[in-house]
Length: 397
Image (cartoon, rainbow, N blue to C red; front, top):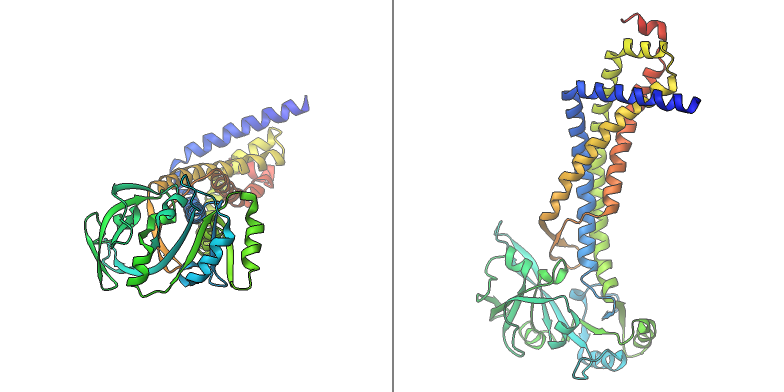
């Protein structure tokens, strides 16, 4: 019986609080919009960081292995001699293609400078020297325009993100690089992966043109996913080699860590500053509501409503403001998924395009953050309302 009375009283107070919120439409709207802005920034930061991480992690395949010079860290800093490549090829025991040939690619990675379409300012772009097996190892890469470059030629194909964001890299155009003219014969799309921000050409021709005598990396596909440790140990234990061996997805995941961490720290710092302003604004709104309803609170107390019930009603009102603001901010942030942004990959110092990524955990964190702001803003005004003296409150009638 007592439980039913408490529930009924809380229901009445919640209806009372909702009617008061609707009565103060302007202040309610402004307070919710302030919280929505903070949640929008909070969600955008998480989406940006997660989008960058997802782009790089999904670039690599779990069954593919990357071999680099020891301590090189990234391909652009690595150097693998032809003799070393031959030794690794013998140890790899790689998967075979339909013709019975091992799926091994010896690739070159160098940086070139191109002008962006919007700003006309130069930016570094990865040009990757590949061979026929490179395409078999990257099954997500598909040609969307033109054709593949012929082996031994100065033909290249460009990633879709490069074609969209840089000058002079459309199908049929020529690039002057390393004292040669390179004709663009195709455009490829790797989806939401880092390869879409690269240019591909024949590895041997690129090595000759850029005066390189060594490869940057060796990539091969495992016959058995579980054999990575044994093959890795066999390659690293060979005294003729000084190399690091990593799964391809792990290699790209490591590239995302520094940049994703920087974006998260910077964004959350800005969010914290904005949230302080939003909480203060919401607190002022709740204090105003408390001050203008002094007589009403006194009447409710005189009718038998407990201090705890009054406290919970005001907190529920504040949580409602936070929840509305959080939902609106999250809705606005979801539209960021329609946009693609680009930044410099700090590991390779090259251009990388990626999209904002919304997922369930970001939605939950954003809504929880908005409710936390609402709770923080409402606690002190709610305590003030709950502690009001009945007699002093009724004098305001």
